Image (cartoon, rainbow, N blue to C red; front, side, top):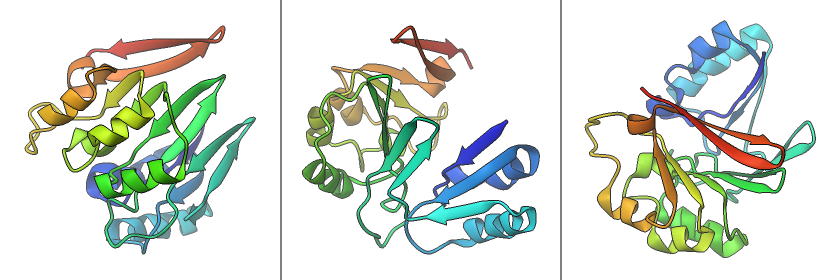
Amino acid sequence: MHKRMKPHGDYDHCGEVVNLVENFKVEKVIFNYGPYNDLEKELIKVLDKKKINYYSCIKELNINNNKLYFLQAKEYDNENDNSNVIYTELDGYKFMFMGDVSITTEKEIIDKYNLPDIDVLKVGHHESKTSNSKEFINEINPKYSIISVGKNNRYGHPNKEVLDNLKDSKIYRTDEDGSIMFKIKNNKLQIETCSP
């Protein structure tokens, strides 16, 4: 099994990445913008030892006949805003993965790109109120929203205000729905969940 990994250097995104690289066949690793932190440096040692290529600050990635677009345009002074924001279209369906970027970066993205009517949004920053502004959600108008959040987490995620911002979207949450899988079969989007 070939995996492409796109870590963001905070522990909640990158903490187990060395174990993944040690136990799966990984083809390449894509880092976010910005200097490497200690977790990323530890990973790079393993990648060098295993001769796995890695990249950062990329704009596009081709996977078979599909293309991933990395939407950041610059380096920020914090790890969250440097996390990868990825847009792709698969069989006519639009997917957007928000990383942990802040409301400021969201605004820069919608000012730079035309991204209406996203089919599937991976909600930013575990649905923290520092991300997922009403302006941003209204602009991209997601049909389905995925929230990656642990049960009874110490941050109080998901935030009620952000849930309100997403009220016109069908919401799936990992704390309630478990794993969430989207499949495109016969040009139709299918959603499967597996309870935690």
